[in-house]
Image 1: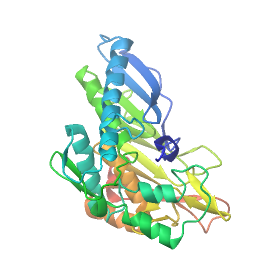
Image 2: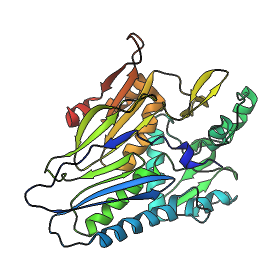
Image 3: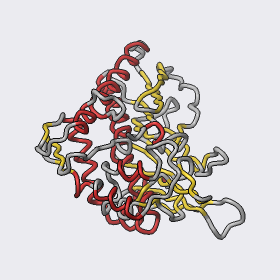
Length: 343
């Protein structure tokens, strides 16, 4: 089975900048963090009325994360999605509203991205060694064809109104590419029920930013330069009431015969992507959509991805390796929607 912690594309991909001191109104600023979903999370919540305790905020955050994990954790055998994966029947299975929302979004992104976002790619990912530590051989064409026959939404899955159905008994659904985004949104809703309007929730690089930071400005988010040998900020965007997520190919990969292969697999070929797009960053109405679309756009690459982004009115920034520059340099291309939001 795929290890979602190992397969995560999020480590250090996008990072909140250091927050400035509180304004003269002196609200209470809570900073809470920990481990969840095979990665880490951090929450910054601003209590303008100074009426909440840190324990109250932490309880709300941890409760929301527990709810998400109970529905969508691929590494918890008792979770709803693990139970679905474990059954071999091909009849419709009733699912919770939360899981139905995520799977409906996954199906919509799958369709709009020409199949590039796919939650059923487990057999292909494992064949390339991203879910099976120690795998070193290049997949044969025969093995790849067999794995592709056991993957793909159209081949293995039907998403209904409140139901999920396998069309192949061995089908498996993995939510690492969209579940953390949903988790960030769900934590945000829990904070709002406490009366908190200004907050930042980040889970493994997927985030939702609401309202303003302690200085009264949009949350200032640093997008990392997609270079494996250094950590530096490529650009800063101000984010308010939006989800943000990035996907990149420069930290998770395997090597075969001296060639580096990205962990991001193109469902249309069953092979790792080879284009020059090093990372994609998406702004969307919520973190769930930003999460799923970041993967889809990265797999498509800048040329095809930009055409889809413009057709769908989506906000995405593509960062490519600049092959014409001396050394490892990058160039960026933003969709119209991204420029309208971030400049």
